[in-house]
Length: 388
Ligand code: PLP
Image (cartoon, rainbow, N blue to C red):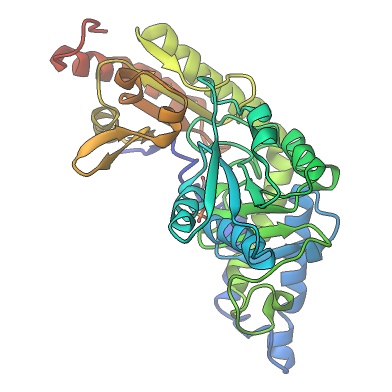
């Protein structure tokens, strides 16, 4: 059975070019870049080249602004914990109500250690309340951490404006750009951003590698302390194959951003419009304009997302649901709850996320099969007045 992979916000396939670029670093080029001999020393140039490509992807002025990490989660943790370490008197953190667990769970954990967390609300379209943000900043605010684009809905936040508000109030600003990088243009050189997190596996790079952009002049206290690697900003022998991989993925993503915003967007829109036209009581969650070109989150009233996923899975169609099993019952995600999506619809929400490796046939097949799945589930749902 062919896999129709529409879950690219969860992870992506490694691009063939990325895999090819990585291979020699598992076999003949296995040296340690820190070694005194030239066998290890030959890794310096490929690592530098990868750093340059990562800097170019986000418009960072210097390659030295990029610190390689193990991925998005580590980058998010490193940025926030650095701010707290550098400003020990500041005990207040601001995040949005829809952050990824890499920021949200860390914040919840910090709140048990004496920090105060303010969560900025979003409206029913997932848009941030900027006035509330400005009003929430205090003298003891250590950092504002607000994502560039949401992983569940694809909604894009006005990062430049958020950065300006932070700059005006003289507070550090971190943005989790894990879902934005490689999908939409990013230029940190034009925006007041102190820290920005990126993860390789969201744009056809390998898993377990990412980077943190640190604006020149922003104080940084390392999270992983050890050797002198990454100029002392992140200890541990460099993951050379993955660094080369994310570098190649960054180069490819930069050159494919046009396609992402034309071909991929068109396929996403065809899928979304086709679903809305053929299935009753289905609604798109989140601002349809300010949104990643590859993502759509759709709620189907009266049925459970998990059941839809299971039946799609039987046909080889992969997507994600907007609910998670918490203590034995299905709970809509914190993102959909923050958007105040009615419970009956949030429960039946599915995220479809595309990539440049999807084909029109994937969309055609999904549009053919999904209405049958929804009808089947609604026919057996005790809550459903709508059967189609
Ligand atoms: N931030 C966002 C917005 C994400 O979507 C993800 C992954 O789903 C992460 C952070 C975590 O990234 P990683 O899997 O590289 O740790």
